[in-house]
Amino acid sequence: MGMSQHILTAVAWPYANGPRHIGHVSGFGVPSDVFSRYQRMAGNKVLMVSGTDEHGTPIQVQADKEGVTARQLADRYNRVIAEDLTGLGLSYDLFTRTTTKNHYSVAQEIFLGLYKNGYVFPKTTMGAVSPSTGRTLPDRYIEGTCPICGYDGARGDQCDNCGNQLDPIDLINPRSRINGETPAFVETEHFMLDLPAFAEALGTYLQSKQGEWRPNVLKFSLNLLGDLQPRAITRDLDWGVPIPLEGWSDRSDKRLYVWFDAVVGYLSASVEWARRSGDPDAWRQWWQNPDARGYYFMGKDNIVFHAEIWPAMLMGYNGEGARGGVPGSLGKLALPSEVVSSEFLTMEGKKFSSSRQVVIYVRDFLERYSADALRYYIAVAGPENQDTDFTWSEFVNRNNGELVAAWGNLVNRSISMAARNFGAIPEAVHLTDADRALLERSRAAFTAVGGELQRSRFKNAVTEAFDVVRDANKYLAEQEPWKIKDDPERQGSILHVALQIVDDVKTLLTPFVPSSSNKIFEMLGGEGVWSGMPEIREVDEDGGPSYPIITGDYDGAAKWEHRPIKAGVPLAPPTPLFAKLDNKIVDEELARLEP
Ligand SMILES: [Zn+2]
Picture (tube, rainbow, N blue to C red):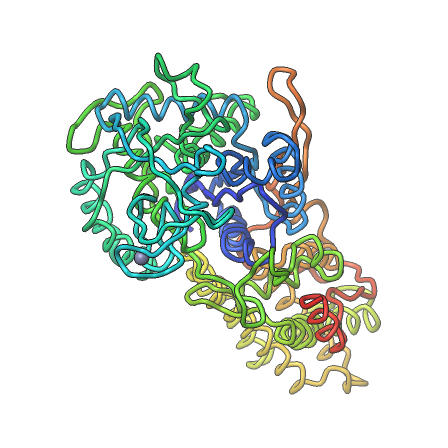
């Protein structure tokens, strides 16, 4: 293991317009937590931050529909989402929100830094309004045909088919998604981010990531470079962060564009975390230390913001684009080291959709099944490299075949046999070649599985850990310790080896299934906390209204290393780690999907 490094885990900010479904958390949630838990175990100093993204028109539109304020709607879903993510055991150092004063001031500081360095300029553009209401029609609520690829479901701000950024006026046959009418376009003044001024710097930056980033992410980002356009960073809207310039800051109808303030959240959350930790400058260790690394986790529809626009914003703030400049008052800030993007999860062959009931909410899932069962499924069968379909039958098969029959059974029979025959971890008096081979196999897995986790190859990592489980089960089947009646030394040695493998594999699986690994740690006599779990705390700013944050103490005993178990540690009969699922739940769950 090398020297301890500062690792920023920057997790995509969920939009506060509803509870999270398992499609959301398979993209940004579980992978970022597996990565962070591994990095902490490997001895690194992790800062894992995120929060709810609460501004923008969709929240305003939904609030109008429900007869509440945008703030009330954001308050509701900030809390719901914090509970969803805590239920999954996601180990955020800080999960906050974009409606804090701290976030407003950091987002405004980044805007001002860009403005002072000449990377932000005003422009009169044509904005869409609804002819029937006279109100601004937000980009996301305009749909039409993409002028670049011809896709007929392009949104006003982006085409999800070709990934290009768009302006609503460019759409062919634009229509309002709210009522189908054709929008009218009127003059409006906005600020633009001069993305073309970063073309060269972004090209150099992206080229330096060859061989490091997932190839699909790098290829997609490099392709976008060919057609960089200035991008609007303000909107006609009253819900959002005010524009920090004279003549603008007091206007109620102009705000920073929601994507602009949301990507700044990684930085503002780090600043908030530092303040809450009692050392207001502590965030600089992750943002200004040349040895620190920043890993950004998201779904593939967000690559453009994290591999291109956010790096450009940081370069502009640092004074590193074509116009030069000087770093803003926070000092020079670090660009993402790696952008880890997931593909999409579909649901029984269909796209997840809350409105069409093709959805499994995290909270509903956790009422019926364990967090570890879902975390394991996402790691082994999630959309890491390609779009992937969630099916209930595969969920049941993997839960019963892999977690219960392979892993849970290895733990259960090893501990129960040793508890029954010895009452404690037996001694390994004499090791055979077969014993040694399995022990070496298991120790070698720390390097192999750790290497995969370091590169965010979660599927390979969990599969290699399970190969050890399979080998251990094969070993027990061959050694048959249950048949040995008159040789307690040999029986004890076999069970010692089996328990050592159980201890090793519980460590290897900790990033994936931390709750069950915590139980095994206790079953084998461990004291204190193995791998810490997140909790919700109520906080406020300067005595203002309270809100929930996710945080936790994750400095448990878990280290990424083989630890020799100690003979003589008392053992009690184990309790089951995982629940076997009846096949009839497949039909029950499918019935819930199509009411
Ligand atoms: Zn397109």
